[in-house]
Length: 397
Image 1 (cartoon, rainbow, N blue to C red):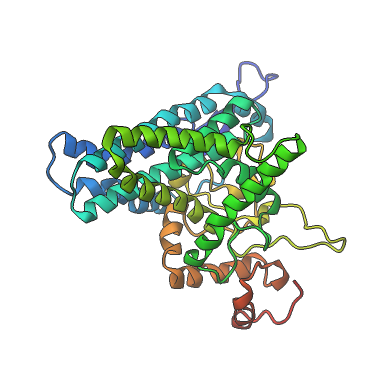
Image 2: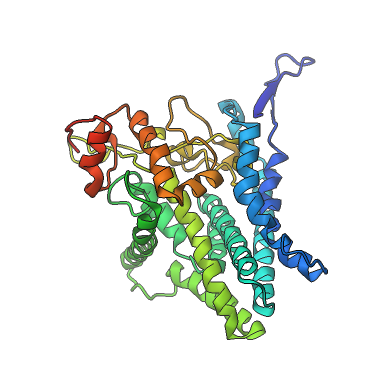
């Protein structure tokens, strides 16, 4: 699967015509999040089997990895001559906008259902996690929109994050993470030997602190204080208060007992992606003291077809960080990249079991950097033990 060129034989002098063979497959990014309502909707329509409440989680975390295994990888790239037309095609942008109401309706419907129904705790937890997963899809949508050049798309990305009370994301990601990615200073880049359960305590608060500092600095340069109405974190926060307040008015204060865990699991899906995307990879410091520019080999890449179709090609993360202005349909694969053994959904499950994660990924980190310890972002307390385990010896950095 991929982009193929076909020549118009009737006009040999005309430029090739390019067809995106994944063009309709991108609609999975629109309909995929709607699976989260399967349990609540089935129950509302009269179904009695509790199995409906587990369907969406089974699809997200078992079905998609299985589809990745069966369908394999897509390493084809759009030819550079086709990229301007791909970037200008309104279809790909329309898909992004079409996903937005699907996300909001799915989350609000499920939250309202959970606030008004007494469920066995396993079914309640499964529905919370499925709904939080939709917020994870939402943050991914904001990620794509937030890298657009126009004001409307970027503002839409900001307000979309308000549903899960994560309005600092676009600021932190675009102005913080992209600048400091794959360095020890970046709270959103995981270190080799660091479990996700340790990483989350560094990543979540670190992201907010950095976003607030960046936004305060921007406002200060414009002659304003941090509490100015132009603060985009406050703007998103105001929308969060409005939406959550409306939910509390409709369903009572008990709805906060649903919104908070749903919002946490949504944010934790972003944490999981951050953990996977740069684990152990390091941009070296140059002799002049600067950090080397971000290149494709500073991110883990995955070309697994099924999962890429439901996350807007986020897994082609190497090209995204090297060229953040490229839209999802134009992202490329490159040879000799650090490669994940599966798509994100399977890798998330692996990350939640640190001994298995370390067993699978640590040797891949060493192989990706060809055994050069100076190219590994180590957890300091594990550095010596890991270097000894993989026979790297002493090295600078």
